Length: 331
Ligand SMILES: Cc1cc2nc3c(=O)[nH]c(=O)nc-3n(C[C@H](O)[C@H](O)[C@H](O)COP(=O)(O)OP(=O)(O)OC[C@H]3O[C@@H](n4cnc5c(N)ncnc54)[C@H](O)[C@@H]3O)c2cc1C
Ligand code: SF4
Image (cartoon, rainbow, N blue to C red; front, side, top):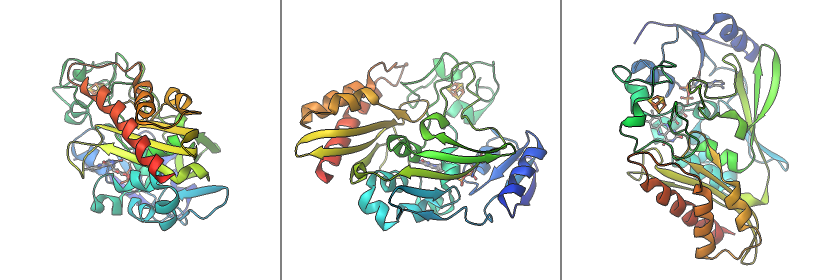
């Protein structure tokens, strides 16, 4: 690991100023569970870190609002996951946090940092001798002819097929969350669905945030859909593993009939993936096992398998179907 300078900011404005003035080698630091990890494997080498953990209010959150739930970017995953209102009324949000990483990591890791975690692609993390367009733009993509078992079947490009690995962002996309950010040119709000980008020809550009923009908070509209919701995550082992396939699902039912549906996929795509065809197909239907399976197939329509990951198309469809049946039981 290369030496780096460290400074602790006391205000939002000071943090943004420091990162902006510091140039490309300067980064925000929250829990450090992703950033230090990437520095150790050499995938990132910042020269200066600006610690935002002392910023007043950044770690607070409020799930009691009538119009929206508000989560400070510095709130710890474990604190939010255990919030009683979230557990009772928005299980999709608490499940997505509980099922991520380990308790020790969740105690350190912030919600904002979680959104900005980078891919677990082994070629990206491994570095040389592997080629990687994310690490070295224009160098090629070793995963294309390599072991692509964990790579994306949706949203990939010729340049990159790396999966977006996070869970929380998938649940947020399903519930139409927005992200408030601030930078040297002022504040703005980004719909959660527009935060992460597909790789296209520039896989090194992963989000719509500027380098010196800080996430302040995440806001989720209060909705009745929260109660009948779940985050269903399938992985190689039952804890402390990233998703092979996951589905964030939320429903509004009248009796057996679906009146409103939200479906988003994790672990299968290059960014958190909203499955609107699946949602449309469910509305007005009785939610039978067959209807749930049809929604799963719709969610994975257009998926492009590589050499070793075609099994995840069937797995993804089944994950959506199972998630819908779990959510139905909660309706
Ligand atoms: C072994 C392991 C297993 C894991 N398993 C899972 C899993 O199953 N599911 C899952 O979802 N996650 C998983 N994670 C990822 C983990 O949840 C993230 O590392 C964590 O949430 C990152 O938060 P942090 O506060 O530590 O971020 P940091 O490491 O501090 O920062 C991460 C990035 O975000 C930037 N950043 C941080 N805060 C802000 C902000 N407010 N504004 C702008 N930029 C900011 C930093 O500059 C950095 O680039 C795992 C991590 C590890 C190490
Ligand atoms: S899939 Fe993306 S991150 Fe992985 S090696 Fe290819 S370009 Fe790099």
